[in-house]
Length: 94
Image: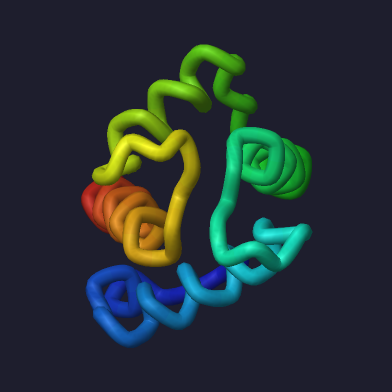
């Protein structure tokens, strides 16, 4: 995945990226990304980018931090907030 720095702050780009990743991760098409689906998405991302994979406990903590309704999974809005934070971190590191 490549993009220029300004895309990382573009709201429409963030939403489109989150939508695409959410659709890819939601393998059972139930409208949510659960722990197993999120772990698979992060594993695939880690393999492609060589960024270390978070531990199971860290993955659960990520979900917990962004799971605003505390149902143990990501809805699209919650997932988008996670992606927004990731993009902000990338933006600040460039």
